[in-house]
Amino acid sequence: MDFRFSEEDEAFRREVVDFVEAELPWDWRNHEVDSEEPDGLKLVRAFKKKLADKGWLTRAWPREYGGQEASHMQQLIFGVEMSYRGIPVDDGGVSMVGPTIMMSGTEAQKRFFLPKISRAEIDWCQGYSEPDAGSDLASVQTRAVEDGDDFVLNGSKIWNGAHSGAGWMFMLVRTDPDAPKHRGISFLVAEMNVPGVKIERIPCMWGADRSLVTFEGARVPKSGLIGEKNMGWYVGATLLDLERSGANYSARALRLLEDLVDFCKENVRDGRLLSDNPLVRSRLARAAVDIEAARLVAYNVASMQSKGQIPNKEASISKLVGSETLLTVYGLGMQILGMYGQLDPESKWAPLRGRFEKGYMMVGANTVAAGTSEIQRNIIATRGLGLPRG
Ligand SMILES: Cc1cc2nc3c(=O)[nH]c(=O)nc-3n(C[C@H](O)[C@H](O)[C@H](O)COP(=O)(O)OP(=O)(O)OC[C@H]3O[C@@H](n4cnc5c(N)ncnc54)[C@H](O)[C@@H]3O)c2cc1C
Image (cartoon, rainbow, N blue to C red; front, top):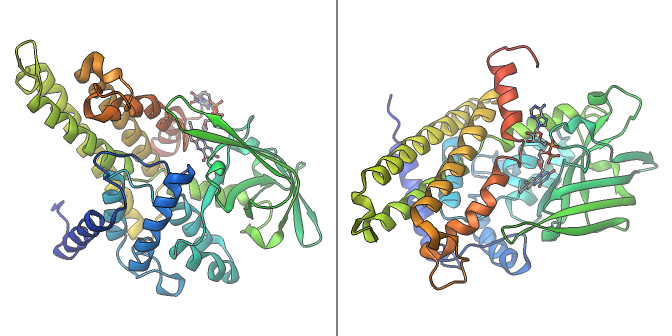
């Protein structure tokens, strides 16, 4: 089997890299951007616009909805090059809610939302988790009651990125409290800037925030219902498979490993270069193997998507392997960098501009967000290996 890109795909990859190097409005090697904060968001929005003008955000989508009908592989290549450089261009619009609308939306919804996503005209946040519904997502309690042309929302959504000022939320809501748990849920997209929506920030230890959103009688149009009423669990679960399939983890891990390798080639510990230490060499080599395996697992998912299949256990394997590999690489970095590795990015003594310290504080969250590692293992065990539910 030939794992290399085709000539055409490689040429596209080069074009993307050259464009990013020429046009990105910040120095990605030295600066991380948080697209959920106003300054970062401004930069990311401006750059996203440029990418959208090239048609790259939704390159694999049908032309009628703003795509270029390119292969899924090229969409993947684009995403990988962005993740490698830490460029947060996808807020879920391109990778999650767009494809979901394409699969389950009406023609009118497709024509309204998809071109806007493709042109980077709307921003999204994800309203799945609630204070009492995380892993057990089917327990969502946010109520949506029909009233004329609207749903009236009451309830809370937590851990999302609403503080970014995202104009829209895609969410799971309970439309029939009397139906069995999975049967009374609907999938809704709703504008956030309406009366009755309160957004509160939750600070995280790596310096970023997540949000608690409270709906108190917020009215949102019924035209935002995607798929059938009360069948949203099935719409929303497909979206999760899309969320979990990303190659972003291994791309990010590769970049970190390259930083670490350079650091080891240039820094001396106990009288010899770190790169001459057999233990360090062995651990770096092990990480390189893990990253390559995670990359191939993610590419398998992309290959399934390109054939019109919806990866399920494969997406869980990819999410699990990718996020845990990233966790390992950050941990390895902290060990190699030693005591100085614990310094904040602001300190002049912080090696590699403190990227590992900040990332190490954050990386555990990657094994929680988008479904915890335990949940991914459950899915692999039951749907992948056919083991009975525990
Ligand atoms: C950084 C970050 C960003 C996030 N962003 C979003 C977002 O944008 N939108 C959104 O909707 N949500 C978001 N989340 C929420 C995330 O999806 C949930 O945190 C996650 O699904 C886990 O739910 P929980 O926090 O309620 O933990 P719980 O479900 O209470 O789990 C607690 C622990 O119990 C374990 N556990 C639970 N059930 C089982 C089981 N059946 N078998 C084995 N172990 C189990 C879990 O693995 C975990 O270790 C984000 C979370 C983080 C950390």
